[in-house]
Length: 337
Length: 227
Ligand SMILES: Nc1ncnc2c1ncn2[C@@H]1O[C@H](COP(=O)(O)OP(=O)(O)O)[C@@H](O)[C@H]1O
Ligand SMILES: [Mg+2]
Image (cartoon, rainbow over all chains, first blue to last red):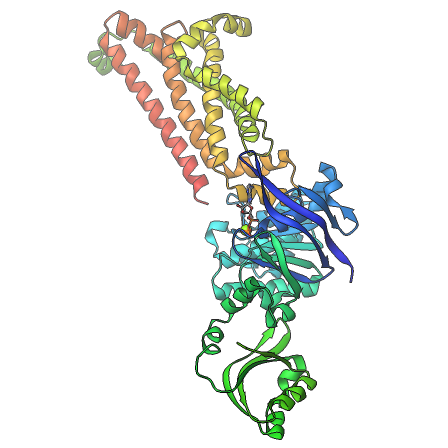
């Protein structure tokens, strides 16, 4: 796993009315080749600042930013522009040229890069529009498209120069849930097929859960937690992370905290293969433990199936049952103790 | 005789050819000065925009100076500007009179005005679109050429219309101090010689001209604004 993006002791402050206002506290971060890396945080946490540091739309106040072996912060202007062509970017509000057709919007980065051959441009545009499923809309103007279609144009445009990295600044935040899902599917397929590294920022845990491999949680300019999505999502440690997870799973928060339940309340997490085996009923039967199901869910984190059950356990042999469950690869946390 | 109904309507107008000539002079002054105004005002407007606070090439001091100069030129009433500029006009085109003599002050009066309209139109362009172009590796010049100007073309077209109409007014004023055209006729015959039918006809022609300019401008703006 080689890092494609490295932040080394990077920090960022903005100058507001002559005062330096910190937006990002010093941090280190490695984003590796081919992964989908999510950065989640509330509004104002510093997500946009962080992602804009990658292509130097925002200059860091200190520290170094490396893309591959290139130190971005040391590049002179023309080299920086060339480097930016290797990094695609899509935006919450799409940022398409209203005066240009869909095809011209997608051709724009090719023309900026100096491609003069009209035939080549046309071919590449056709190819890109086919990939994002907009071939029939080439001649339309952005104002004639739906939000989801606009973001697809944005994606086609971002891919035009065959970048190694795609940055997504709240790319689905202006879209309805169904459109969000289809845009995320498109991003996931691009990540798989083009082996492109994706960095995306969002305030929705669901976006992270669907397509990210790893995630960093940003809170008031600090990275408070980071790791694989499965670890962070299934076992959130920081309060901010917990809140994000709860927002993604509102029903559980309510039932698991219901008062007056007898027994010890435990949360069992099954990942991958364990989700699909009848471990629970076998262990409970063998140890004579009764359980009351308080909450539960079986779902996926990206491609990983998982189950999470909150149970109230009653029986003399509960501890032995827990040991057996752990031995079977099930993660167990005691709740509300 | 063809002229007879006109003759009876406007008995004081004895030389329709002169009126036609004046029309052509006004159109020449307008066309020439508008072309030069756009040629000078457009880059000036882009410069004002780019060097403004928080913009791509922010240069607060430079912006302050240019901005002040533009404001000074804009605040001098045109007729005074024309008189003050006479030596400059003479140096530039070799005459202070006629269509040629009118063009330098018209341009110097209108270009700063148009530049401001361009600056305002450019500020309407979404910051995000500019940022997207930057993220794609566009240079400042590429952003101006391929993002700012195309995206602001509706606003710029509206600015050209407003400027053209202001120029019609300026050319009429210029008539009073020797630049010729319809304003000259209105002033000499209509005002100084009390031939009110001259006044009526020239004003009517100016109204028609302004109306035509506005209609043309609105059409272009509407076409650009559709998307
Ligand atoms: N250009 C700027 N000038 C001054 N302050 C800024 C600027 N951009 C962002 N900030 C501040 O930095 C903080 C982080 O902003 P941002 O990165 O946009 O957060 P997020 O994308 O997570 O909502 C906020 O407090 C914001 O007000
Ligand atoms: Mg943001």
